[in-house]
Length: 113
Length: 111
Image (cartoon, rainbow over all chains, first blue to last red; front, top):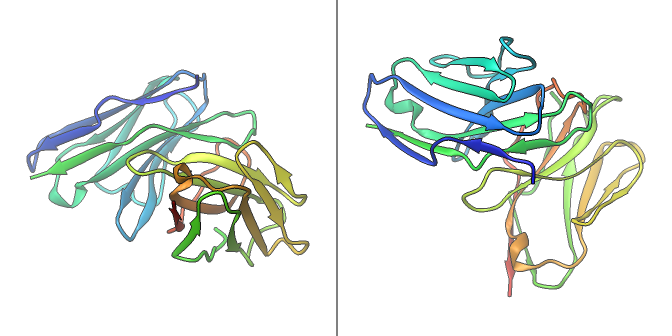
């Protein structure tokens, strides 16, 4: 069964802390994405990566960075967490073979106090 | 990105068909129409996608208007497990291209 795994379902952090959200996929997909989901705002794209060490800004990259050192792993980094980054974070991956389907992880709910 | 219009919410009864509409009048000629759904406390999951012709799979059917400005997702026999938010997304089929999720339609299934 194909899988996108996010390292933590729930995290609680303090303002100013550095936060790492990890995502691993086992489908050998070239493309990986980080979204955040907030009530009333839907899913918004933060960053995506179409290859190892490659990254592109999405619609709301401010306050975030990403790392893709290996094909299967895409990390989202909050350098200095703030309360407005309290959200549900969703990782997704997609094949480069133009099959269309986006596979999502279960999400990481981050609370910043 | 093409704009989409979906009803905020819909309600149906178990074991009845459900037709979920979507308007995407600004869709580009090469964009596919993708449908995803999000069950409570889970990430979105793929349902179906199509370009021009109607499409069927084990989960649902997708009916696409001839002018491609609208489409309808059809659940043939709804179950309680189909209660979810359904997203209609015009977008590329290419892997490196992003998909933009709107607000979707919250579907409630009554027993």
